Length: 324
Image 1 (tube, rainbow, N blue to C red):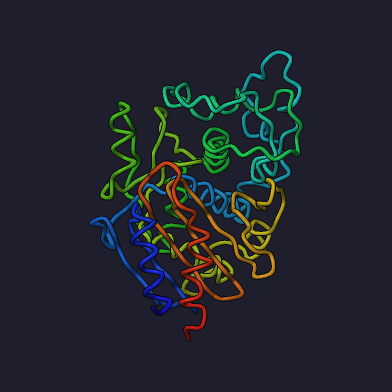
Image 2: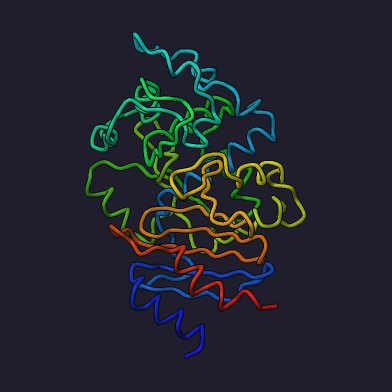
């Protein structure tokens, strides 16, 4: 059995929630396949891959002068926010603390139900930011904390997150994210997780886009994002985002056990400068700069999804790393 046959056997047997996979080597598509009645046009909810897109947008906002520095305090962008009595930590939290997941929060477990029923996700997150925890200790915020970045982008740019993303990132890469998506009930939200034909970005009741989840992309869209980073931020000869931001955001700034974290990107291998955007269900944008490989995997949500990085390192990369 050759390596490619083995790879496809493993995918078919153990990764049954996959929607599509694309492998780019030296900027060229060397593998593209779809599953579960998906096609090249299918848009899937990529969950926490959204965070890495937000990281890109923060970098662009800094490049364009909308944001001065990641060392700015979060509250600089929310002058009308009323700090809760006795709160002494939130005042010192910076954008960098949020980017590296080293900001403290007051809740012990994620209050998902209260979050989803809240009208204002940015304020909900701000109300939970700070407390008695230490700034600098890694605490992964899967859902709630990143929304603060949406508020920051809106305040800093005067545009919605989707409009800003469309102008400076999606349009240059010919990624079409059609509209905002708003849920009126839990059933609509659950259907969104399983959809392959909804194109957009989830918003709260105030029309502010979610930052930790909620974006839909095709596997090709995801691969374009990876290739943009592999090429130092240049797309079709145009500098979309600075190479300085890419380098800084894809190196280790914090750690969670054995895992390294950049600015809303997971660092996979320092020596190969491999890093990934990862979301629930097994959604991945994987970039390996040494091997000049980009791999995108779009998946439907399933609890306890099989490890995509293991799949990539053990079965996918070996097939394509020597392609010319």
